[in-house]
Length: 59
Image (cartoon, rainbow, N blue to C red):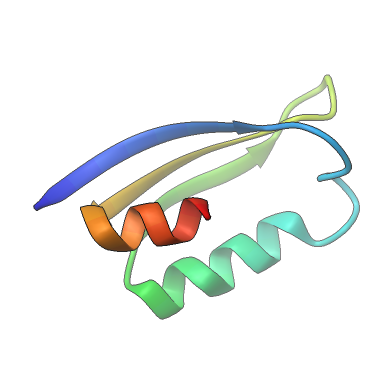
């Protein structure tokens, strides 16, 4: 089953290669979407793909 989730991540996520790490994991799991920094220091993401793999990415 395919799904799409919207995720907001807070804490120390900018400046620590969070987006690059997320891209690497998403590529390994064959997921699509995007990740971007917000002005308030959080990171937001859309993750799309097979539900089991999306949940694994979130973990």
